[in-house]
Every structure is written in structure tokens, then in C-alpha cells.
Length: 175
Image 1 (cartoon, rainbow, N blue to C red):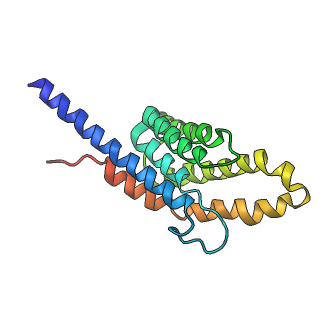
Image 2 (image 1 turned 90 degrees about the horizontal axis):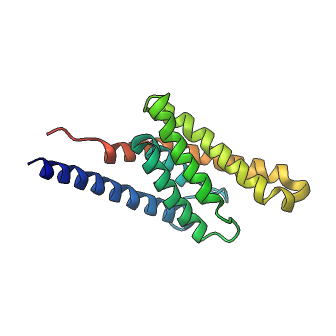
Image 3 (image 1 turned 180 degrees about the vertical axis):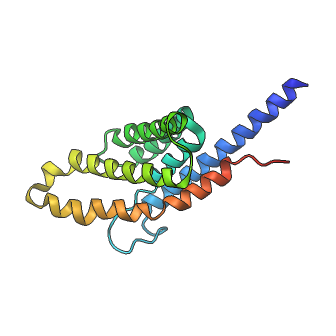
């Protein structure tokens, strides 16, 4: 009964992807609700970026791209000024992390730390350049160092947590 095996495999994949979608949604809630997540200062934490990197690493290009798009749409839907920036950026991050794992790098924690740090830095820097350089004027460097660069460092602290969570969901259990 080949069709039964194929159905069970697809059912397992669907269940895994539903779990990942729930993790993305819960992470979105933690990221955007200041009362649910501890923030030592007013520095925002961008939890979805390392999560999308991890999902892209384990699910590869297509599903990394789709989960990045899902996370980006969630952020854009509740953001006043972004004009689809988050959707485009997180989609690209998910796709590129899956693509680089498929072709060049190995899927391990060191690679995840590297991809996440670069992705967080680029994500925050591009967002800052697009939305705050012209508005901030003279104090742009102060805002970048004290808010956006601090956000990169604060977000980097959670990369290992997301790697372990996504790895646990995506690992294949041997019977």
C-alpha cells in the first residue's frame, strides 16, 4: 500500500508545518506585545528574524520562503509604516537561508548563529535607513547605536533557543 505510506508522510509533513506556523504566530505575539516579553530597556527584540532563519535552514528554500512571507505579513498587518518591508525582507531571509544550506553550508548551530547575526544586522540596518534616517536628522547615529544596534545584540541572544525549538520540531524520530 504505497498510497498509505505517502499519505502518512504528507500528514507528518503537514503536522510539522502546522507546528512551525504556531511557533511563528506565538513568536509574533511575543515580539509585538511588550507585556508578554521581558525588555530590560526600550530596545525592541526582532524574534522573527532568527526564527525564520532556523525554519529556512531546516525546511529549505520553498518553505523557508513561505514561512518568511507568513511572518512578514503578520508584522506588516500590524505595522503603521512598513509598506510590505517586513514581508519582502523575511521572505528573502527564509529563502536565502534555505538556499545556502542546500548548496554551500552545513546545518548546524554555528551556521545558524552566522546567518542569524548577518540577517538581523542587515534587517535592522535597512529598516533604519528606509524609515528613520530622513526623519531622525542629526540624531540618526545616536538612534542607530542605542536602539537598532542594541536590538541586533539583544535578538542575537535568542538564536540558540530558536535553533533548538525548530530542530526539535523538524527532527525525524526513528521508530
